Length: 575
Image (cartoon, rainbow, N blue to C red):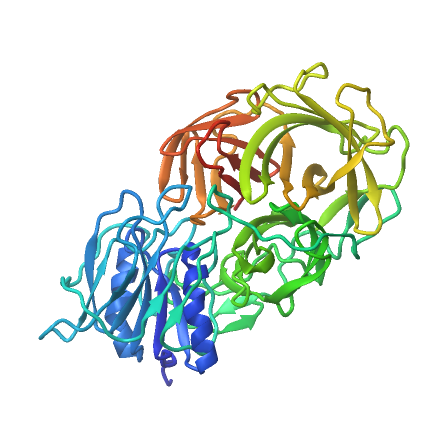
């Protein structure tokens, strides 16, 4: 029988150590697309999957790769090393190190040329950014990958340069995807990443409040499109080595050996996800799983006019993570119809965290029991912008059967157990607005009783349903200089081990987070967790990461504690 031989590789390889590097590396891919030069993409980490990295480096030339564009990051705690390629390499510095995602010393653009007499290009790295929550898989067309361990291979020192070059500034939580076509040099503008930090900024714009979206006039839950989780058609990468994500997507199906598999959490039919972003924008994201095309409609915003926002066709990174080559957005499709990710800010100034749901609660009833199925006491984690400066805060809030709300905070703006007689309080109520398919949130006199009339419209709310569990999401948009997001998760006791797992996280580093008992890692930084601290349902992280976390219904939110020098706000969902 004739043997199946792998197709020749494209002439350019784009490699990076983490999915978070994609927003930077995507600029190279976009330039290559414009020039009509084919390329492949891989996630290969010198720290986590060194064998795979050496394997890729050793075999690239034989497969036909003529130039490699590599994302090089200097991550916290990783040692520098050298790696020999048989192909000219252009290195692109990446941002990394801790949850704030600040660029470290040594950031810059590195060029490489073959070392004299060796026939190889020496690639100096201070280690390709770590892969979190993915990367290696068993069995591939070119050999097995290990997620860790050492590998053999010649190393050489030296520098100097050749091949295509690329320049960039800071990276964010993006994804790695494949495409066709590509070429040589690229320059990227700075972008803030999928999280919120004290250096983030957002652009203003015109205000708008309303335009279309799921209007339901009956009481109960509504499911936009098809809810549930069934595997439909999705992008499946071909010619991928183990742990890598590579070029050309095809519809449906799953396979092994490092080739991307279909995501079981994609909807089975065209679906609308209703939610919002950390800039307080209420929105609807429409996804066609057959083509992976998505569109975004801004339903309410004080930063831009309501209406269509940039969309694209998604490409699979790995598992249920997808990225948008055109916009830089990245999305993770979770079980229970949850969508998390990072979406482009108005004016293209970076990315902002996103949370949306396939199924939401809606009611137009004004009876005293209209909200009884979603009422409860919650902890809240929030980010609020004053101008372009973000700050974070925690607290507790009660949503009552009639749709009235009361929020409590301690004197420092932090978490406190809900108490109807709390001193530092805010009150309001919600009413469904069929014009934008969400609830209008009116703020009322904090010294008065619970009322459902009057007040000032300051926010909107989407009440997501994960299974039958409510997840209220408040989208603050009092004005073009006061906006943000607050996520409500149950105020219930959490024990060590109860929230263990890996989390897809929208943050500046974008590398994901892992919880294992008292151990917590986020973007390569480690911390110790104290459960039900300072109150029930809140987990406090201390060490290299100092933060407060809330968990519930497969979701997580991380905020910097009151008084912190920089504001950090992350959303995540359990994988």
